[in-house]
Image 1 (spheres, helix red, strand yellow):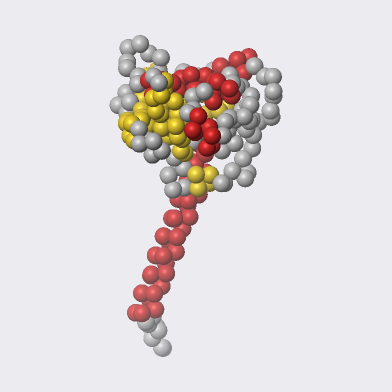
Image 2 (tube, rainbow, N blue to C red):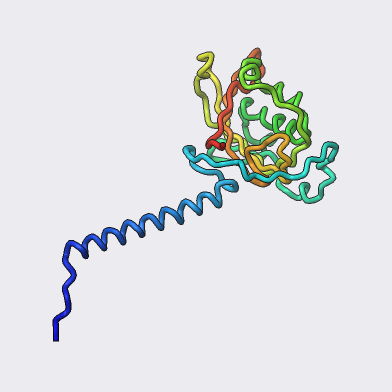
Length: 213
């Protein structure tokens, strides 16, 4: 009776390495799928780029009064402020809120009421000339709004001292007339640079935490 043929050590080692590589690739694929599935709900890393090609938006209703939408009224519509340690309503009289952050209460209010003209007043003239003003949009069902103060910095355009503020919120039944970079109930962090001009705080720059295409 012939003995069993031995598998060469080199071939066995190669098989183990290939198996290990296959396992790593499988884990990486599963992780990528998890990120892709959750990115629009929970945000994603700064170097992540997602596609908006397949985004679906709600039907546009020009004259809709969102305050008659009972579903929207049940959502968390309070605008909250965070200093990194505590979180509380931005209009609270019991906690200090920097003026650079407080302006985002009115900023959110303008979005909710579909007031493009008012929204554009929160930006510097230089920013509007470079980026362009907001066009008309419908009332937006904004909720889960959080304003986070990130601290002082230097404005890259003017060299002036300024403040950095992070803003996140979600839009229920997003119709795409204001934001086309997020779907309904998704969020995408925005980092604003705010400067003081003649005693009034205005937005001089805005960047997203991650990119879309």
